Length: 92
Length: 92
Length: 156
Length: 156
Image (cartoon, rainbow over all chains, first blue to last red; front, side, top):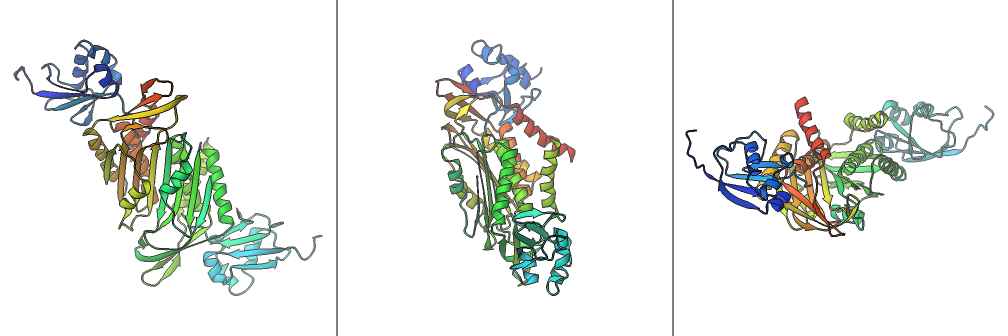
C-alpha cells in the first residue's frame, strides 16, 4: 500500500455488556493499516489480549456503528472518525 | 294464524336523517300481524304515507336494531320490545 | 374495562393513569384519539354534532370490548366517545388498550376503533361555514377494515 | 417532528397538546407508551437501567422519523425515550403520530415503534429482586416486525 503506515486517530466506543466486558467506554487510537473493514476490525479486537479477547469471542452478537450510523460487516473504515461496538439494541 | 289479532305494543325509534325525515324520534304502536321480520317492517314503513313513504324509499341505506342489537333483514320481530331505524353509523 | 359516552372532554393522561394504577404488569399502552378536522370534503367546517342511541351505544361498546378481550391479552381498556356539538380541533373519541405486551395493546386499539366505527350507533352531522349542514356518509373503507378482522378470525 | 432522550418522565396530554396546537387539520392521533413491567422471565424486577449512545441515538431517531414521514402522510410526530434507572410502572418510551387520517397515524406509530426497537441504540439492564442483574437479550420477534415493514416497501 502506498498510504502512510500511520492512519488518522479514531475514537472507539463500547456500550452495554461490551463496555462492561472490555472495562472500556471510550479509547482513541490509530488502527493497524491492514484493518480496513468492520469485519477486519472485529477480528483484530479479538487479538488484542485480555479482556478484549473474551469480549470479542462471539462477534455475531456484536453490532458496529460508524460515525453514528449502523454498519454492515463489509463496510469500509476509511475516513471514519468514531466507531462504536454494542450488542443488538433493546430499547422501546 | 292462531295468535291474537293484536300483538304487544313496541317502541319504534328513529335516529339521524331518519329522525329528521320522519319528524319522529319515538313512537309506540302495535305492528300489523303480517309484519314478522325486519324486512317486512321496512316494507310496511314505506306504506304508512307521508313522511314515512319518503324516509323509507331507499331501505338499503337503513339499518335496524332490535332491543339494542344490530339486526339483519331476515331477523324475526317476535318478542322484541324496541326497534330502531338509522343510517349506517359514522362515529369514531 | 370501561365505556363512557360524554358531552365533556377527556384528559388522556388522567384516563391512562386511572387504567394503569396499581397494575405494574402492563408493558404497553396503545391510545387512539380522534379529533374534529377543520374541513370536510373540501369545505370549511364550522361545527360537528354527534348524535347517538342511548342504551344501545353502551351495549354495543361493551360487546366490542368483550370481543377485544377474547382476541387479545388485555390488562385494561377504555372507550370514551363524545356527543353533542364540537368544534374543529375538539376531541371526539378516545380508545386506550393496556396489555402486558406491546403487540396486544396495539392490535386491540386498532380492533376497537375499527369496530367502533362500523358498529357503535353514533352519527355525525357537519355544519359548514357556508351555512350548509349534512349528515356524514358512512365510509366503505371503514366497513372494509372491520370486515378484515372478521376474516382474520376465520383464518385462524 | 421531534425526538428527545430524557432522564425525567413525560406527560402524554401535555406532549399531545403541544403537537396538535393550532393544527386543526389533524383527524387522528395514535400514541404508544411503553412501561417497565414488574417481572422479567418469571423473576421479580427491582429496577431497569437504560443506557444509550448519545449522538447516535438522536441521529437514528431522526432517521426513523424521516423514513416515517416518507411512508405516511403525517402532520406531526414525537419520540421520547427515557434513560437512567427506572422502576416497575415507570414510563420508558412515548411515540405520538398525528395525521389528517386515522390509518396514517396508526400505521406510523407502529412503524416508529418497530424501527425504534430494532435500530435506536438503547440497552436495558434488568436488576432482579433476588440481587441478580443482566442485560436484556434482543428479541427475534422485534427484528421480524421491522423486517416486515421493509418487505412491505419492496412489495409496492
